[in-house]
Amino acid sequence: MNHPALPSPTVVLCGPDGEAVGYLPKDQVHHRDTPLHLAFSSYIFDSDRRLLVTRRSSAKATWPGVTTNSCCGHPAPEEPLTDAVRRRVHEELGVKAENITLVLPAFSYRAEMPNGIVEYELCPVFTATAESTTLQADPEEVDGAEWIPWRSFATGVCDGTLEVSPWCRMQVEQLVELGPDPLRWAAGDPTQLPAAATF
Image 1 (cartoon, rainbow, N blue to C red):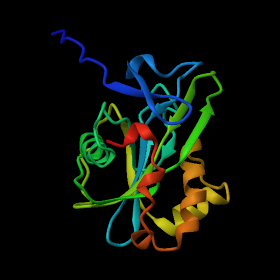
Image 2: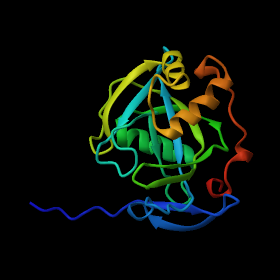
Image 3: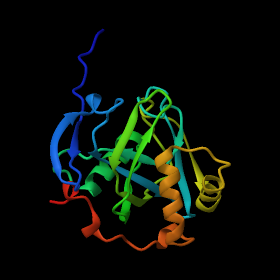
Image 4: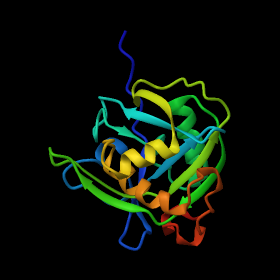
């Protein structure tokens, strides 16, 4: 039986000062001339300071099959980022995210794949804790997942022995500066968020 395709989610496009300048369906955003757009990254921990590390689905347009942080996504127009984190963590991983905390409000990056496809995002970073470590991952988004002690993960990323997505590597290099205990990192300043992320 053929099922009608679901409409592509809408992505918020951003101007050079972080303001919202328009919208595009997600399936039209990522290519060789990807426009700057709003996103988020999240790092989900359990009570033992283990990080939920995922491997991106091989069907992903960008960095398929690559190890990365817990969950990334794009907020819908006028959707608060904390709501977007909570929604996407549940949709992709089947986990309820609690204690969602903004830690890197001004993170942004541009990265290009060998085939020329580009990611170009204003991408605030959040931490959260998981209500349960039992996952129900969406195979269209995630090929695999495991809980790894934060210190081991961060060390592997920073010394290059663990290959991860380019945004994850850049984020981890900044996150380790916040201190050794991820559950005690200070909240970031929300006034540093991109204008497109504030309502």
